[in-house]
Image (cartoon, rainbow, N blue to C red; front, side, top):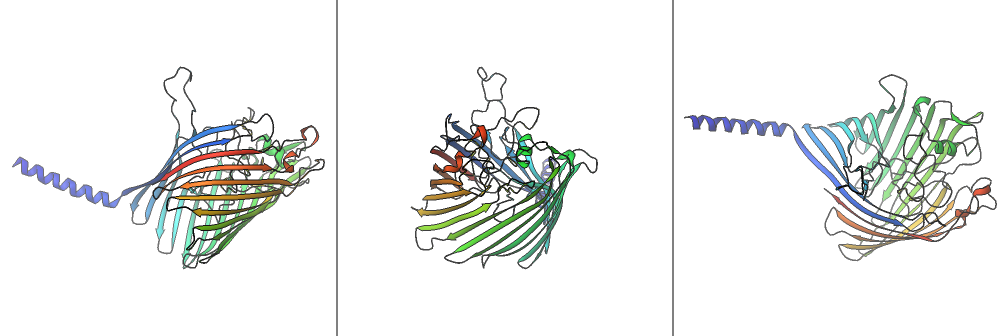
Length: 476
């Protein structure tokens, strides 16, 4: 009798457990990445400042399906970068957090952090999202969610958005807070934005526009000394004396056919930086354009693509007219990707990260010890690519990149604009779906622009340099 009752209780427990499991389930996805990078002479002169480092990184994205159409999504980053917090670079191979590395028996622990957590409610004609979520737009020229297999950076926002979908059209208003000192009101940075987009998958058509306004109290801006110097073009006094109010308008268009396709993105920024140069407020006034052309292989083993674009550079005026692409948007392996040379030719010090973030200590990052934290800026470029599919697993890709500066270094004597030519060679191996191993060789033939400098900082080097990278990614 006791055995019969036990079996009934066990059966009832299984039924109840199964019902609860159907009401809520957990779905996992993620990716793993390992990389090795070497750059022979990032200084383009002597001393060479040679770089050689490895990266190791894992991310996990659990999605709790609480009910039909109601999901709670998060992301955990394992082995985070201590030098670039808020990135997805990963930990440097050999980074040792033990008290005494020479005598310790292990490398010490690495950090695990949560970079995303948001609620997603899907309805018939739209979706509501609230929390810290990724944000991207268009080609990722300015906003990138970091979804690429080898993306090292990402954009996230604490915001509430509602996407209204009508056929192939969607409208997404959003409101968020990018920074808050504490629980009080007013001591923060906020933004509002709206995205209108048309996308037809079958016709391969895309058209969209995104407008945004950011506002920030002066007490929250916390510009680094290098950023203030970049905004003020070295002029003094240079300080934060006002609030920030920056407007951004971005657009994207694209169309595809069987033998040709293109995408084109542009972004324009204007407004107040909150910085004052002497007696004048520094205003933003820059823009960037990027285009990608595709020529699919169809029946051939050859396919072609072209990247071309430009970003404005700062001029010698009270306004800051520089513009920087998102760091994920790579045109070349070396140029616009790694810090090179002896001067900020691209006017990107205004957006470069610093380490440590505590400004009472000097910035430790330079051309010899930084990762790929450079951006496209103050230049225009042309980068055609030829890809040959050897077989279903191997492909060979060659890219030539030519670039020139938009504005030469102010006050430079006989300044040139030619940035030179880079040749990137890639071998891509894909043994199975969701697994890829990429080996890259970059050869940079610097132009005369790298010699630009002013006063005692003139006569920079422009020696030949090369780089090598071997990287593997697994997604699941």
